[in-house]
Image (cartoon, rainbow, N blue to C red; front, side):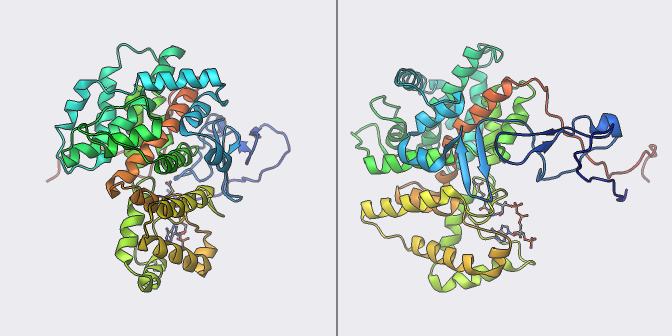
Length: 427
Ligand code: ACO
């Protein structure tokens, strides 16, 4: 064990030891180190993947310094303004916006496959009624692999497309049922007279014994939330899906793995954690205490909804979400004291040297919890809504990966354990 340095100067000079540099269409170039071990006997060490491009991808581009997020080249702000989640899902999967005919076909396919097999509904009864919806979703989506395994050939493009459509189509009912089960309400079925977001709302908040009228302002706000959360290049959950999928695993099982990864508070679980934090703060007067705690290195507490591995300027999604939160609260004639605390907290943190130095800005989760709460979502459903949206991104990455030929993803390690020793029984 120990450290020594090797010459890692990047030079354009070509020699036996030089490694190719690959240019993308946007963003930093990447040194191709695939032959490093076979040529030099060295591995690259990058825990946390701060300097590692794990794959080539043409789906989503993020420039964290400039606060840019593009899906297939389109800025997130334009998609949030003009597009719809289902159109965005098509775009992520296929690379281009659908023509009217393609859109109609896609809508029909999503509508055809949005029901759950009745046997799947019986799975819910196996969970404690107070189980977290994300725990249920990991289980139920994983269980879908038992329903669509032998009938599916992932080498067949039509079968792959169908698996992706099934996942996007079924996810609203899977998420809604994980909530209605916990409150003991019978689950409504999807109804194709509704659009995607409205269908989810009616399954979440409606009951089978009455007509449910979906508020179009809330449906549009939810659709925008889904668009904003649909993809974010090689984040932890997407990388989990890709890693699981690289072995040729069943796509439903791969997406279940993605849901598990998303649940963590450092990732998708942050929207729930933000709201809990804002509730604990309680009043504007307590904000400075929380800021001090977040800055204290001997305290593990972090300001939830602040900071991002990639965004070191601002998260473009957080601006759209904040606007929507204000719009929905005004539409509903509600005031949420948590919005005031959040805005004040943001203002104070953004003027604080600690946050400025470390380039910590509000991320997408900082305001999304306030918006979802205003819409009536219980706190433990926030990450489930995120999972529903991110399914579009996960399946797109799964589809992209199937076209690659590099085989199973198998990282190496820097071994720091015991060297060879021989067995003698302990006395
Ligand atoms: N509050 C206080 N300090 C923070 C925060 C925060 N939220 N985030 C980062 N820091 C500090 C770290 O302590 C570290 O300080 P140091 O350099 O003095 O040691 C420095 O900023 C850099 O932090 P890292 O942990 O290296 O940043 P990383 O890129 O690994 O982490 C992460 C990003 C996980 C998002 C982090 O900022 C965090 O935990 N934020 C709160 C949780 C959150 O909001 N997650 C949602 C992310 S967005 C999403 O998944 C949709």
